[in-house]
Length: 223
Image (cartoon, rainbow, N blue to C red; front, top):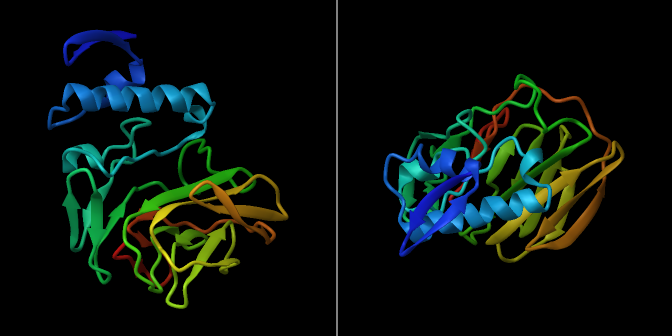
């Protein structure tokens, strides 16, 4: 633990919070540092923190902060193509070239938490457009928050798209989780959107992207 002065008071920060904040190139405000620490405390309290490989908060004060993996020094995001950062909002791609590459490849990472029968993928999309564009993921694990025909499209340990739930607003929080071989669930804004009967398959080697999908035919989102 470490004592940090935030605003007019001093508090004991989680060591993970201190490690993250000291990696910032752009200094964080005291109020923001408290929000960061509160978030990490809650993730630890509910048992989620230890299960994560990567956790990014793109809606940061500065772009250098947004690109950092809160879980550690590995898998810093790299910008590619035309992708624009807005403070406290995040990154938006241009739909043709822009994406963030995490460098996290579940098949080559050392002792990943993201494995065939225990995996979770999620993102928060601000854009609402209906487009056949992947918002996060790779060839066998991805989320398209709103397809051109207004459906949530999801893969999780599958070589083909299986989740397909009607959705007329691509914005919000989306995630998918699997802990058995026979099926997985995907969610929107905390509610279970669909249980998908889809047998898990062995993964192929692709890095995870944000703001796009690292598929055999790459996809680039505007959301």
